[in-house]
Image (cartoon, rainbow, N blue to C red; front, side, top):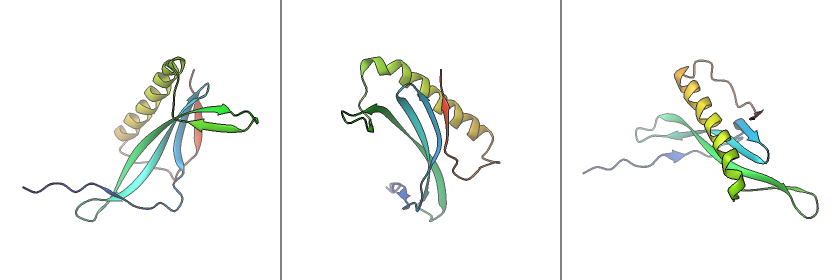
Length: 108
């Protein structure tokens, strides 16, 4: 029985965020990634990272992927917007696929 080999992500020279959604300190970032499938063809896929921004004791901005219970409603908002963006982008067929554009939308 043959098993599918996992995707082999390529090292990105400048993997910039494609889109960001934030509300309060919670942010969802969509990343565009490239890899090769079993046949050696280039494929494109997207991943989403979630983080919470905060200031440390010295006043410097930091981020963490640990969330508090009060962060969960905000997480739901940004996750829903990220999902909506990806579904609409998929429906468009990536016909107008732009270069990585670091745009951030504030979600209310």
